[in-house]
Length: 170
Image (cartoon, rainbow, N blue to C red; front, side, top):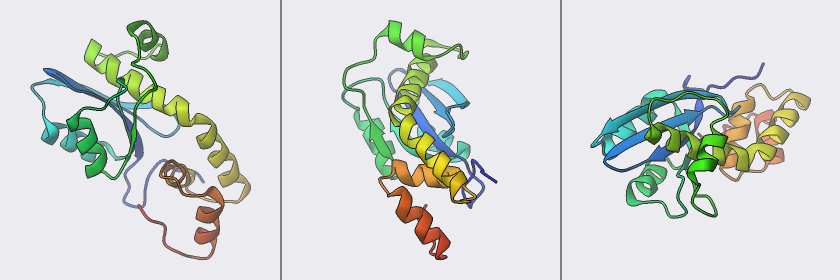
């Protein structure tokens, strides 16, 4: 049966980050559902790290800007996550469209959610493929497979290693 939790009981995440005087975070699970959002004035690296650690295991750290700032780059390194930046800065109009009706408290959370949603959409075909192959191959933890695919592992290799009883990383 598919699960959205790792062996440690934490869910895998796509985390959108908005830095600035007021910082925000928005997290999606690997099925694209929003599972957490928050904003904080004068938040730093410790705040982001704490919120992410308590929410799950981020496999993607995303921003709405083409260039990730230092805090976002450090978060990706701390969590050994993929750093996602869009090809061009996401416009306010696009941020409002991407939200797909999800409610957030502030424009900062909106920006973080748009970053996460944009990253999810960029990986969606691979995630859907991993879901289908997990079902076809009776791979019980489809989110583990999705996380491994995001981290650049071959779907075939992950399924084969699991069937052979090899321990999967992460």
